[in-house]
Image (tube, rainbow, N blue to C red):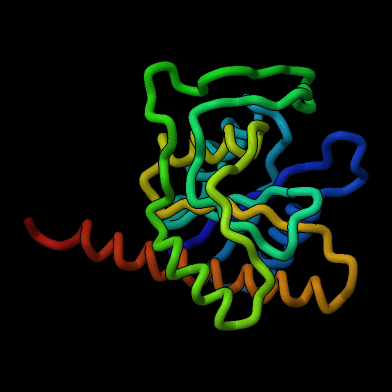
Length: 196
């Protein structure tokens, strides 16, 4: 059983993206986890995710993105069916309006979101609940992942780590989240294998 982790490349003048650093660290320190970088591109991010799913056949998917000003980790409960960003992606492409015409307003992760927040809180991991993954490529990729792939999927925004202690707490939280996704995928696999 493999958990696929993705993180975006730099955008908006950034020289690096904390989501890539966090995803790479997690793959190096969590068993059965692979990291694949994805471009900050509407079309490119979806293509990269589809290719990674075909290559690695993951049983769970953890999507990471960067949120300026976030405190600790910000798991996203849902993806919303709209794009509102006031800036183009790294390919110079703009998106505005619904992602899926006639689709639902939002799609929630199948992960037990409230239980996950309780675990993070019980371990002293700085985090914040969120009902909105934004209006840029993060939300776009989350929406397509939830629509196109059956595995347990969660998007988490990460913040910059101003200190080594902050980085360690974020990393510890990502390990807990990866464990929760792996446990969820194990349950889903057992259910799928059960006779009807």
